Amino acid sequence: MKNKKTMRHIMLEKLKKLSPHDREVFDSSLLKQLTASDLWRNSNSIGITLANFPEIDTKQIVERAWAEGKQVCIPYSGENRKLSFYAYTSDTKLERSRFGIMEPVNRTTEIPKNALELLIIPGLVYNQEGYRIGFGGGYYDRYLADYLGKTCAILYPFQLDEQIDVLVESFDVAIQKLFIASR
Image 1 (tube, rainbow, N blue to C red):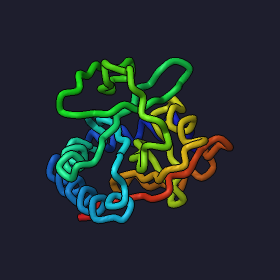
Image 2: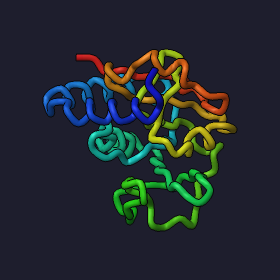
Image 3: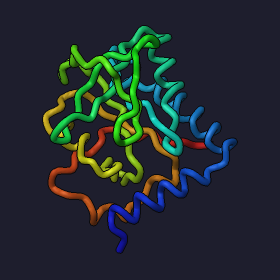
Image 4: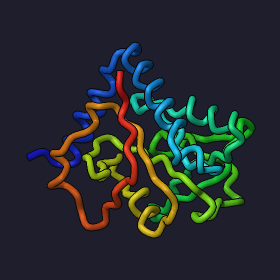
């Protein structure tokens, strides 16, 4: 049986090896599915990570949200594995976190959890029930423990792997909706 660390490594390698063409086709599929969904249409505020390669690129999603007048909020990974979200615009100054993620420099006005209507949760491996193996910090599971809004994830077909069923832990929080790319 594989452990979470091994599964993370395997999935990162698969993501790195995905051809630019396949990545473009999958990303287009995900953008169409997400933005056509009721989850998207009924949400005026979106929490999303500014992804780094080899993760699924979130730039088009952010730009689409802005074009539709939605508030985009990005996370900051703070002390004691505490995640907090801040408004993100094209003028927001960013810095690279210790995890390599771009985060807001100005963190004076945190967006309350109840103001975020939809969170697009990052991850590496998922099962059909919405449980995931993330990047290993536990930030999102802590944040989601008392989050009452809607959650979804975007993933490539090969990121769905039922082998993680045995790795689900009591503190893991399932994602409500998975958008799986297609050709």
